[in-house]
Amino acid sequence: MRKFKLYYDKDAEEAWLQSMSAGGWAFKHFCMGVYTFEPSEPGEYIYRIDLMPGDAREQEQFTAFMRDAGIEPVGKWYRWVYLRRQAAEGPFELYTDADSKIAHYSRIRRFFGGVLALELLCMAMEMNAALATGRALFWCFTGLLLAIVLVLFRMVLKCNRKIATLRKG
Image 1 (cartoon, rainbow, N blue to C red):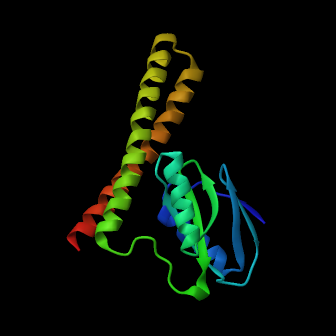
Image 2: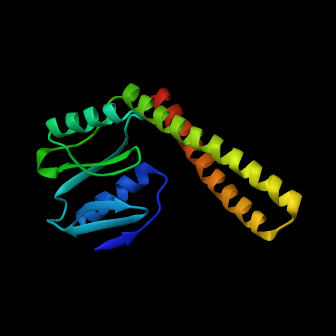
């Protein structure tokens, strides 16, 4: 089965993958918003999503470490990796203490913050072209980039809130 969904919140995406697993669908592959599932025993797998390091060598070490720990990397999208483990093996958490969760959400915040900065630059250039030419096409792209900027800004704010909550204990 295939399903199309766009997620920018990895926690919401994880929750959705868990619900699909509970319904007897094992996540198999992801590409550009299309998730592929295959039938499985209900609740057979627990899924986690993580942001890998940027360096290719570190990514290889990360996935090798996960495999050695009995965790199966199911898919990868840029730096995001989809991981699963048999539910029968017990709870599956990548980050168990507040400090590691803070570091995790800080990495995600930096990632989205960097993309946000690039999108703001692109939007400014597109808006400049729209103002200079008055062409509707440039305004359409400016609007699209604004929507992307707002989504990214929301993700940075969500990470800030999660970090603040974790720091409060």
